[in-house]
Length: 277
Image (tube, rainbow, N blue to C red; front, top):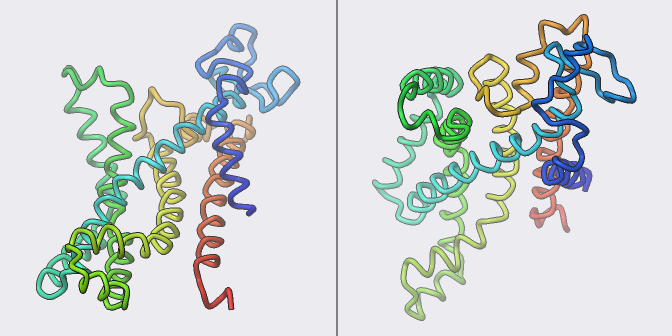
């Protein structure tokens, strides 16, 4: 319940960001009054950063970006992982072996380094092309990459669940009444596998948010997007002078990732019949 409460809080902040933020996220009017790196006050509750931005407003507007990254990346990863893991577990045999070796190949790839290289290369390629005019193209690239490299754990869990469930009596009963393979997979096995999948997906959302923050902190994020990792990247050099500009986004990342991890633990406990006994 604590994890769910934290997530609901972040979602409410993200949805109501224009109403909650005291300033526009791109408002640098504090620079005109020599108000950069100003300490927290009634005018700026979380202070200002080195470029004169209101930290509270930037943190609030970073919530939609974080949720978009987490949910978008896990949507891509879930589709790929469920399809590959489901086919592998249900078909079995040689197909199962080939798909699992393919999955293990993705598990040994240094994902973080590949994402940094691809994001930088893609950012150079799109310069001067029509793709450069697409809003937040760099952020969408990061989301897709996190999804493309985040599906193996989902695929392994899906395969294990399909291997277990396809031997159950209700599946045999569905075969006896003439149900097609598609109906058995979609209407009988997949819904019963969802409890375990929801847990791993909830953990993955928090992991994707943290990964995007790390990518942005290293300077590979989308400069046009307001994200918590970008706030850390722009303000870590001022940590001794204006620590509030780094502490606020750090706490936002911590609360969000903690919420999804606690929710995953709670769902795992709720879906475990042994704990219910």
